[in-house]
Length: 535
Ligand code: GLN
Image (cartoon, rainbow, N blue to C red; front, top):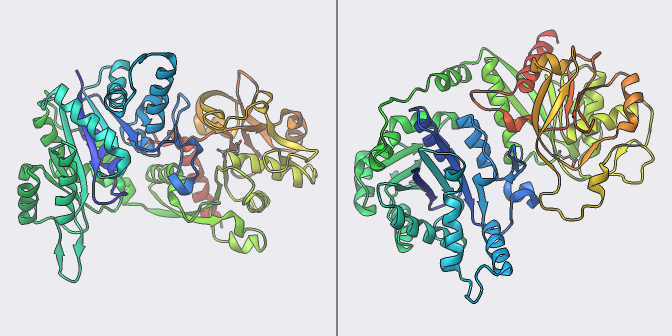
């Protein structure tokens, strides 16, 4: 039977529950345990696929095509293991299941209620992953902050679950904030005391307190927290602000979080943690020998969470190249005029994924600039589509070339909806989602990058390269070097005469992990380094 760890948050949001959960999972995994992490989000959307990045940051996509919370990205980056749709549950999903069952007559004659029907469905979902494969430990992160009305059914479900499974099989880890009052020069424990009280009101006594802090936690503070919150002093863990999120597993190791958890859950493992690959990665990350500057052209640049996986992929690729990758966010709406001046000094440009019309012209202008100046270019999803539009406009001289997403009345829809997408009106989960195969052309840049001819990558889009234009585009020098073998859709484009120009219809950033950095990011950083050296 799996052991269950629940991670709750108190005092404020954004304390980094996902990173703490992923770090603990990494430590347990490094001791040879089979671990997975799931996220339960208390909002009513069925999934975050219909939320915009201002609400929810990036939408992460799993191999099986689920649109999920961005924390699943951290889980995969840390554990180097794919997650699936079962790793992210929302209140919307819970209610949808219960309501569908009610309509089907599953509760015939009964009043359907939050307790027990909703809490039963939450508990069923707690253990779903265990049915797929045996795990030693399943970590469940509960979104939101303790005390939120929305999270009450989850707290009640945890209380019941602990009662059923027993103290030896379940553990609650509560992450809170210890603010530092500059005027008093003091760390304050009161918000944490209140937050634990809030948790106690739902019938849950936390076993471990993880305290986010800007300053080290002295012994007296730990003792005070232990006394007031009824936990062991050793189970008060300092989570001090770190230079990088990748430091956190080592900081947690130093605080002996893994040991405490193993002891409390009575887990049998003789192994000491083996973090050699992780430490190697960190060593290279922290001691770069050179630096490149990459422009990230997108429309959410005030919001780094919107491009979370792209930023992290550059961290991984930078470490491989022993190179600091400085990302300069460039707002696509600002690239209407004076483009050359605004893009000066960059060693490479990545044009980001996105939806809708806003910022499209700036993306196309940026691509024209890098294409004609031989500056390394990497386009992801919408970025690839914009590269095809730019090439069609400026090289094929199709002045109204466009994607039907932005200009459905154009006579040259070089990017268009697939037939089977045209009849779809529902927005939730109806894009081309998840992992698809792609066949790579021998001798292409893509071949050099991947070192193989058959790959699988994750998708999230409705529009596609329009194969009606394939011949004329290829005759003019842009090649389709990656094709879906099942339906001939173009997945990768490149310009062989250019130093480094690649656009991909899929999302490579969703597959980059610490132990398995993505090859396109690695080679893009290499190309940027070469460009910098030459110029
Ligand atoms: N909006 C484009 C499409 O739906 C691209 C999506 C994306 O960049 N993820 O095809």
